Image (cartoon, rainbow, N blue to C red):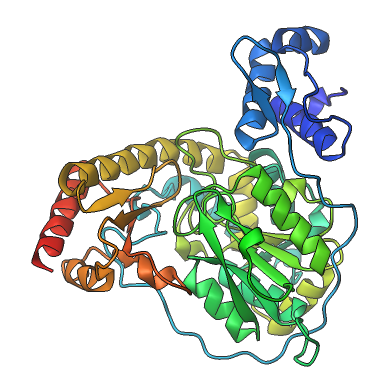
Length: 468
């Protein structure tokens, strides 16, 4: 194993090297890995570095260890063959969208804590770029974004999310919504070719994504999600041109897709020439363990379009998101963005690049991760304290929202939500996220949930259900 010590992130390099060898077939199921102590001695590293890499691979499903025995390669499905996803033609015209966001409130899902935004650090970065006034920064710029921000984004997600790409595959956009819309319109073919407009989507899933795909001309096929994420083996419909997933933290259930399911999604995409839209919207916030690496990092088929946003990490008002695309798709998406003429202001892009490169984002994520973990725990505890017999909350192991399901399958969750939101809570009904038969429940944002606020909300839920 050869490590680039000048590049840092040695644990990430070890993780990536072993993972790639497993996926490439160089390691077989049951093969024994060296002990962490032996590998650390061979590489001249601290044993903790090896332990952390092994633990990350074990959490992702690549390794297994039994008490008192060696760490071995886990049994996995056969990875999809190397190749490139089939290219698609330009899209049909879209349809109108309907909004799905409630009015702002204390428990609005997906909204970060706006009061914790690092104003001083951001103001310094933005002010420095605004004062520089270099002529080269004041023109129309590149449709895909400034080179500085694209490089900073790639450096960030390569370390934190295991993404593997080159800078020319990164595009900067004002929102994930725009990324979904543009990619869908580029990938989906004109009507007339059987199956060319089919999109497999998670059920339950993100209503805005569903609406955007429909507007781009997609015919949606709902695919059931459970505690292990989307199960493509249960897909009941024609082969897809697009597959839309939130594997690291499924929206709205919070489930993390297992490695077996991830490989199955990649295999389905390769078999049908589909593009996978991987929305990694709030994966930085994982409370029970280290974040699972992105699906894009194990893609060997040029199938995954990886989507990320700073709206959940920082604040929505920045209006900065990004996509990391297959090499064949990136220039087509950049051309579509150029035609739209909508871009993130150049000085905002350059300031954000400085913000990332100077370490402010890493510091903010560390600080907010601890705060959000405490608020998630407070919300789960409050629901268990006041609503244990009527609601079953999720584990709360990550993200900015918590799903909780009613024990009564006949409960009218929309009626309960109307009563709660009259009090300004902005909670969502889980029925709104289903395309097929719905399982009633509630979706609560936790980013602003103080201990007292979570307790009051749980008591309001109890009262609303008792009155229904």
